[in-house]
Image (cartoon, rainbow over all chains, first blue to last red; front, side, top):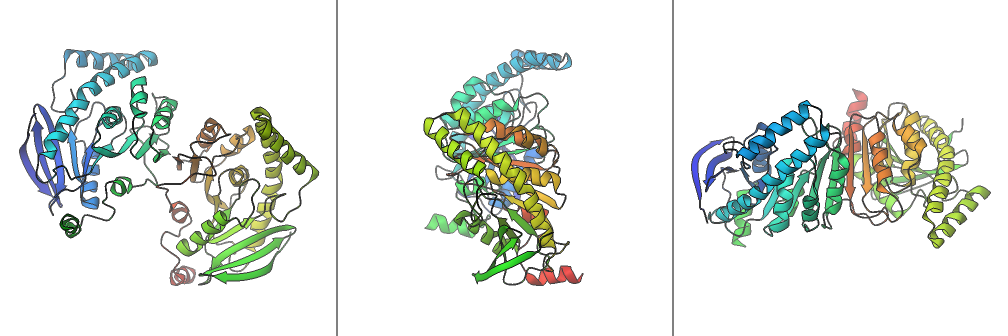
Length: 266
Length: 266
């Protein structure tokens, strides 16, 4: 098992940002400067072609830290961000560009599914190793509740099989915006934790029926579908249940360190 | 044009409840005991076979009055509550019972569509006449913003064509749980105001695809779909955007009469 090694630390506006590596997987951990002992941990996925520190992901992480006192973690997916791509990854990406340019939607979908499922197979064990290493940190330990904070698109393609096999994840935010394949539907059927599912209603490339089938497959008794117009890049979420993770990870009111201390002492 | 005549008045827990008639249509108006001058008006629909004062509708009305200072209005649909049924209504209801008992889903759907569309044709002009009469009341007038507060099922079957032809309605809550027919899809295409759409994900009788097609048809740039497990009787809504109507009817914070007075004086 690899330990988590911090490689740099900065802080601004109440949020500490620490880069780390677990083996050869680089990640980043955001937490409250006010202290984060055993605060709920939210695992954030990123979209295809993106990385662990996009502006949108940074904004979501900062919001989660300053509003709820969460500790937020993101890692680069295989072949994304700082990580090298395999020859197969390069080939798949070239094929995706060609299919898109040629308007070959069938080839675009089949290549996308093959590429994303290959990434997912590699990413799930990486997330689990990262979780093992995070729990070795005294500030997290085995006590901190863990949620998957999603990210639609590839963040969900990775998060669904991860949540299906990972009992430490007790609530999850997923979403549409990518091609759902059968193995994901099978994985969703094994998920019983509360799920919030965000669906961009209008996607240029992706059939929304497959996303609805994925929502339908979750075995969770508590699951909520939320859809707004737009595709997965342009969507503007309206009327979202912002407290979903806070409710399920036991952090329903702000990031008061005194409250946490009280919980620990009690 | 018929005037609105109040027939009784009671009040409890900060809410005034006044029964009224407009012509031969009986209705009820809930408002704040603290005063309701030009408060936003929310029109509430009720489900098939139910009436204007079911416990669920009463609870929603009280919540809207005490939380947002809204004035809430409900009327009995044709052949519902205090209103007589036509021979055709009785026939349709008998057919629905028979089809259900026989497990004849095709006949159940076709009869339901015929019955609901007949009710809708009568209910839309009744709602418009009620609105005319309400606006003659000094406490409402032409200034009060108007929203449709929905009710899934038949409340939506009536609310969609009403909102399509009624420019006074500036935001609407609709929902699934009934058989959507083509005329409703056509009406939805003419609706451009903000829409919140509530979908019970699992309905014993109704195909959810038709409800998704209805949501898809709204021309509104702001529309939100919210789905939870359950059918339209058993559903438990979780993480709903409770402020939707308050935001769009300009009543984003509580029912402070001073604030309203200030608005009127300004």
